[in-house]
Image (cartoon, rainbow, N blue to C red; front, side, top):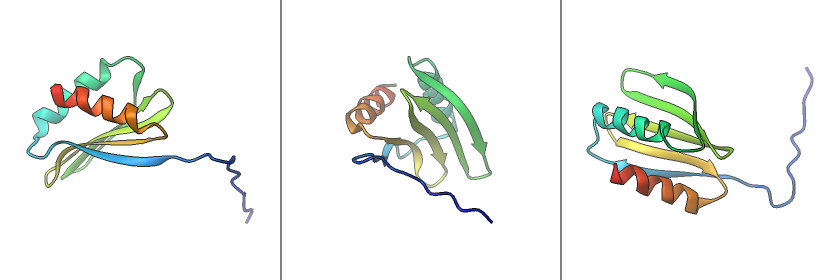
Length: 98
């Protein structure tokens, strides 16, 4: 078995930011927000995960990972994995406006 080492550059980091878009959101809201995301410049759909109680669609936004998630318990949330939290807040604000 061969092990590979991951090399990180100094000051290279990323964090996952979770933003609740709508606590009372339903499946219809999820699809509407996914449509808004898909029409947003620099956002590209990468994959979809659909289970009985959760849906998660994965996007790329300016090189960062982004997931729109619908959960029957938590509503609609946006997960942003990147360095720039301001970008995530701006995108979440756009989704909340609808």
